[in-house]
Image (tube, rainbow over all chains, first blue to last red; front, side, top):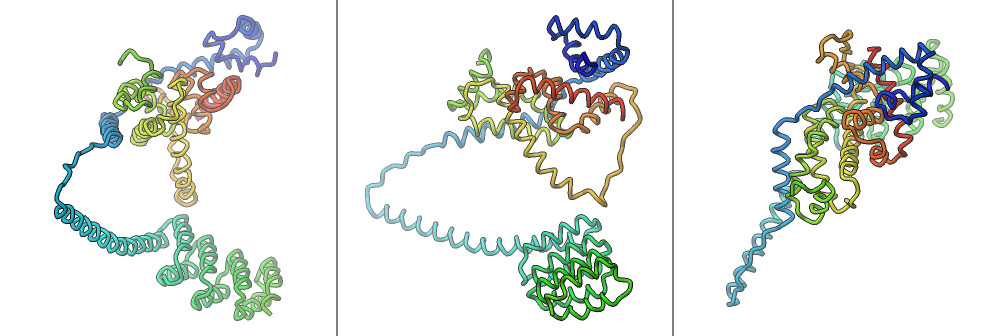
Length: 253
Length: 176
């Protein structure tokens, strides 16, 4: 018997739930093995701590909320039935029918109205949230904002401007990288294209440069040829950035 | 009604007598609450999740088929925990990087309360699948064969896994 096999049986041994054979095997082994004795002692004291844990009592809120929930469920499960007295004369029917039509009409109209304002306000709310995220002091929150911005359309100029801002001025390269990626989805906008070219000329981080080179090639922006060639000539440009230019430049020529 | 078994009561509930759920609530809510509290270590969240369990019992009452009630309700609790865990996991990963919280580990404990806190910290260092085995087996005293039923595994596998988790927890406990 190996020590690990014996130690596997310790919890059962301490609970006295082992078979007689297994039990005497463990006992026999313990006579000669100091290591397992130590392990057994540790396990014993540890289980004592573990088993001294007491159940905690939840606050009274739990029961209150449960009672409320149950009452509600019982109510929806057994809807109250109210018998209407059958109406005899047709004028009253007509009156009722007319009032129902008016109420439903008014309701639908109101609903339609409120839907419109609701959609508009939800959109506004989202925009505000994303703009706030883009200005957050934490870089990971800003990245989150950048990726959320993808869901907007090119009409949301505020979002696009905020993204361009990130691309130019964010001190964290990962945020700039994410901004470039998201902006590439808005590449039909001329300001976006300008921004991407400009940042290829100015950004000094090589991974941002590589991303920009790929994007500009993908969106077939021929005005970027010049800045790419500049990168090639510049002695300080790292070799792998140059390779990226050489790879992508032909597709623009 | 009080003398009925959990299973008999649950069958009545499935049959439409929703108000009997109060009895099962009395019998189980402390256990379920403690299960969650050991898993997430947050009282408010644990209360909310416990409430969810009983809501789900009503919603899925038709799917109860006369099996062991404790195993059935813990299966629900476990699903609710896993949904909660997945949801918060996303939020947690968004917070890494620059918003790292300082670690607040303290030296080895002396008093009883400190000892319990220490254990809870060790417990939270386990994977949730390991933690749940220890919580169910040691704290809730659920038998191996029932745990096997709850997590959809064999009794032997549960024994081995619980033992490993226990050993790991012990090592963490004496280390930190």
